Amino acid sequence: MGSEFEAVLAEFKAKERPEDIIPILSDETAQKFLVAWPKIIIRRDISFTDPIPNTVNEQWVWLWEQVNVARQDIVNISGIPEMKIERIFMQMKGNRLIYPDGSVMVLAEKYLKKLISDKIKK
Image (cartoon, rainbow, N blue to C red; front, side, top):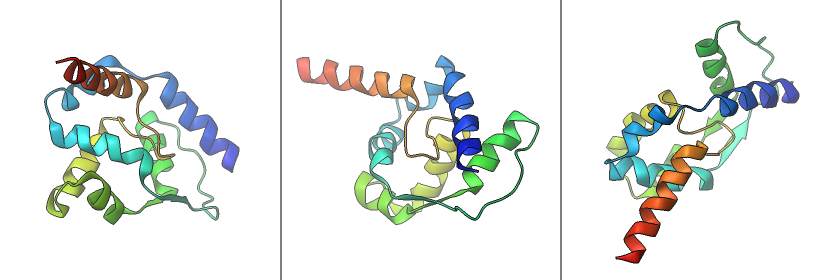
């Protein structure tokens, strides 16, 4: 089961699209979320046995059904108000900017690094 999860996840990571980072370009809340995401506790449900669905969108849901995210950690680490967390979580997840293994889309990471680099230089 674990290898199926990793294989499907790898397929998504291999298909990242540059336009998917549009939501974070001018949204500091989204940027804070992405910085916090790798620090969040995510637990896999090792008893999950549902078969891999056929469609890409269903596979994305299938991956996320196998994990439990400590949402309060997102509030505490990101500094985003609790009332905004669910919306921003769904936006980041829906745009595939975050992965259920705790990683962040590579292009989003690159953007954040450039953003910080540019601010430090000023």
